[in-house]
Length: 267
Image 1: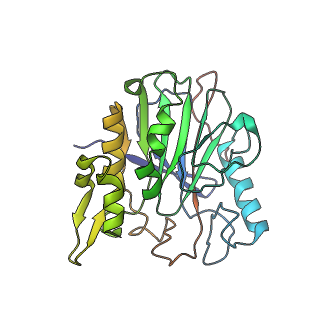
Image 2: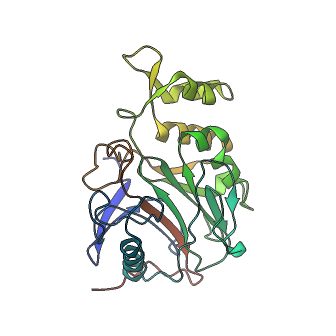
């Protein structure tokens, strides 16, 4: 029997996807779904992004509910994601243009917003350092995962990685230029693309491309992958399925200095 890659839990009516990975007990991670908030259609209901034309009071309330439901130790460190390779440090304070964040500080909550792009969380196996990355195809091709790994003091084989939901290969059709962006640098990345029936088009597998890059970098503990936002758009936000007018899920990671397990607030 294959191990479960994801577990779904309900916390104060907020549905969360939690990873089954080899991070130590004091490291906590989860991805929200679209369920449990107050936003109206097409952002219904738990949109956590401020840049998608949702009503600002709804986003504020959704973020408040999330923080309360998880008993977060601090406000999440949000990013202005730009499909690049910059890795931010929460100690810098201001909202940065970045696509990943890294910290060695306890009770610091890192956050990534997605709605088809891949979210990736990282943890040193002893729990001393954590990171989160936003990995769309541009960021993956440019090296966002490698840039994030470079922030750790431990070698890649001492880092556990979990892949959150993303658009699955059956629904992610791309052009030749996307495949070339990967294969020019690493010919082995061709394994992440399957020719489409349409000439010059391919079905891109973000999960496989991420795994290839992580394995090449030396990471061995890779979990998750395969939860498709497009096919599960009733509970996950999908930019393509909703034709660009939709909300965003959040993937969060933080660590407790005392190594305590996650204890969500009770209703």
